Image (cartoon, rainbow, N blue to C red; front, side, top):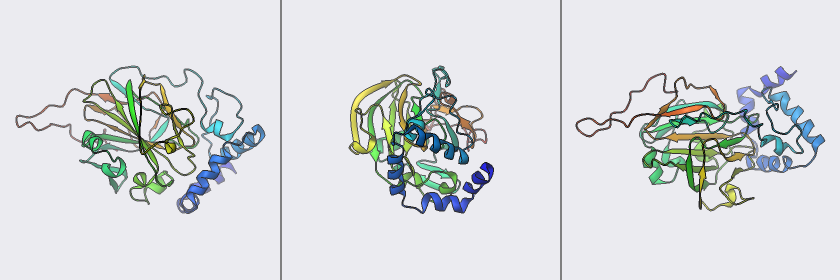
Length: 309
């Protein structure tokens, strides 16, 4: 029975219709309300129903054993030590538990959400400064399924000085939708955090993309009780220092983080589409300063099947 239900949910056309051809904002507001209902019994029933469709929902790692609301389960914290963080200073770690979607090199400012579905960095990130900074850099899309751990963490020692919030739609961000909706990430609600590193020439940027049923994105650098929807479009904050592995915020349901890196980083060996990462595992590694030829042009490493999705 469980297998039949999960198989039904994976039927492409039905999945697309059920998750996208419904009033998405209304469904998202409903989920926000439902997930806050304080009822241990209702929560236990909801989790049992959820597990009929998601056999990978494992709560053994959760810090608490019982949940008073479904929201508590979505945003659960983990037991200490279950996500060891690679402390090598040359390593940029995955900010979250996730499955790798597309990844590779930006072609100028062109990024791919799926094969044959490009979008421009300027459509995703409005800042001209950041567009220039990550031009010809690297990107990787990390999808958090609804059953996964929903909190995200600093991938390196860094500062966060501002949060840029862009209102938008709440399309589903699963692979089925990404193959059908052009520029989907650029249409959805999102929060942009450029991580300031001690080396000002290097950069890592996190773009947290909301989706259907994501009630909000919470960031600890904003005042208590304020989510990104309450912030101004470009919300300056007190500079906040994060140590590698320290929690930055969380989604209130599964969604996506797109990570951008400048050219002085490279993907860790073996990164591939469909790979599942756990928070704290090596995602990028620092490389030597790119060499320039006698004409001053940057000599960049060639593309290879080992590096690009």
